[in-house]
Length: 631
View 1: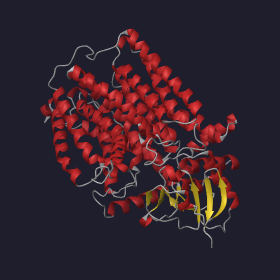
View 2 (view 1 turned 45 degrees about the vertical axis):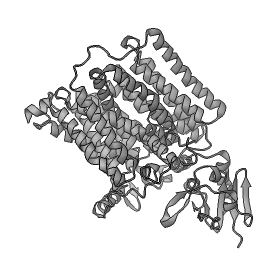
View 3 (view 1 turned 45 degrees about the horizontal axis):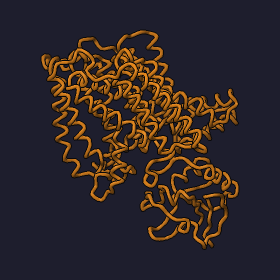
View 4 (view 1 turned 90 degrees about the vertical axis):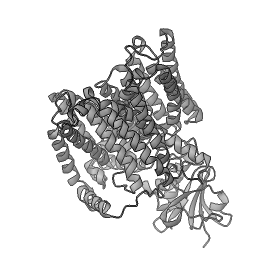
C-alpha cells in the first residue's frame, strides 16, 4: 500500500473515474436531467486525458505558442479599452443588452488569451489582474445601476431591515434570524449614515464593492499553489463564472458571506502551509465575520474546517503517505464550531433558536422517505432538458446554464488527479480536493434526492473557489504533458466559448435574460416599482388579496405592500381571481402563474386574459394595471 500510495495513486483514481463515468452513463435513460447526459462525458474525458498525460515526458519550457511583445501589448490595450467601452455602453443604453453580453464575452476572451498565449516576460500579472477585476465591476455594476430598485427578490426584505435599523437606531427593527448575523445590514446602514447616500447606493458602495473586489483575492490564494500565469487563470475563471456574477447582481448576505469565505480560504491555505500566529488570527477573524453575516455561509465555512481535520487524519494514514507532516487544525475547527454554535443558539427562528429548528428539520429530512432520482419538482430547465419532449431551445438553455459548472468540473477532475501524485500530497492541496468532492456531492446529489435543507443551489459559488485553484493546477499539468498543438486548439476553443457561455447564462443575467421568453426576469421597471407603492397606498386591510405573476408577487410581499400570490389562469381562459395586476411583461416575458398543487407554470398571457373588458380598472399607469372582477 505504501508503494502504491507513493507512485500509482493518481493513475489508479483516474482509472476509477473512468469506470465511474461508464457506470453512470446509463443514468440518462432513467432521468431527464442534463447532468445525466453530460457528467459521464466530462468525467470520462478528464480521466482519459489525464492518463494520457501521465505517459508523456514534461516539456522543459512553456510549450504553447505565444504572441510577440507587440501582440501582448495590443491584447492588453484591447481588453482595457473594451472594459471602458462596456461602462460607456451601459451608461448610454441604460441596460445590459445582448450587445453588452457579447462585448463582455469578447473582453473575457481577450483576458484569457492574455494569460495563456503570452510569454512569461510579457505577462505583467498586475495589469492582467486589474483587467479581470475591472471586467468584474463592469459586468456587475452596469447591471446594478440599470434597473429600478434592486435585482433579485431577497434583497427587498434586507433593505427593508436596513431602513428599519436606521429609523429606530436599533437591531430590534429586525425580527428575524439576521438579528444575530447583522453585519450586512449594519454595514449598509453605516455606509448610508456616513456618506449621506440613498440606501440603494450605500448597498452597492459597501457590499457591492467588497463582493466584487474579493474576486481578485483568489489570485493571492492561488499563488500559494502555483506561478502567476495559472493563478491569473484561476482568478479569471472565478471572476467570470455565472454563479459568482449572480451574487454580484443579487446583493444579499450570501454575497458578503461569499466575499468573507474567499478571505477565509486564502488564509486557511496560508496556515496549512506555514503556521503563523498572524495568519491564524486573521483566519479566526474571517470565521467570525462569516458567522455574523450569513448562516449558510457560516455552515459552508464550518464544513471546510471539518474537512481540514478529516484531511489531516487521512494524511496520517499509509494510503496517502504525504511528504510533509499535516498541520493540526483541530483547534481551529473547535473554535469555529464553538462560535457558530454560540451564535446560532441565540438566533431567534420560528419561535425557537436557530439551532433547535435546524436540528429538527435535519431529523425530519433524514428520516423521511426520499424520492430517489425524483427531479420532477425542479424549476430549472436542466431538470427536463434530456427528455424527448424538450424543445431545442430548452436544450440550448439547459446546456448554456450548466456549461460553466461542467468546465469547472472538468478542470477540477484533472487537478484532483494531479494532486494525488506523491510529491503533491500536501495538506493544503489535499484539502482542496476533498472540499471539491464533498461540495460536488451536495450540489449534485441533494437536489436529485429532494433535499433542500442545506440550500445546495447556493453552494456553487463557494465550491468554485477550490475548483478554480485545483483546475488551474490540472490544466497546467496537461499543458506541459500533452501534444501542445492539440492543447493549443482546445484552449483556443475554451477561451472563445467559456466567457460567452458564462455571460449569457441565466444565473448571470438576472436583470435581463437572453432567453427572455423562457427565463424569468428578476428586475423590474420604474413603472412596476412605482405601481407597488401606489397600490399599497390605495388599498387597506379590508381589500381582498391581490394576485399577479411571479416574481412580481415577491415585491408586494417583501415590501409589505399587500398580500399577493400567483394568479390563476386556465390554459384557455381568463384570470379567475378577484383582484389581479397586469404588466406587459406577462405578454412578452416569462411570467409564472399558479399551477396545480401549489406549483407554478410558465406561460405568456395577453392583457385581455388578465384584465378583461368586463373588469373595472382600479389603477393604471404605463404598462401596469390593477383590475377587479365585478361582484
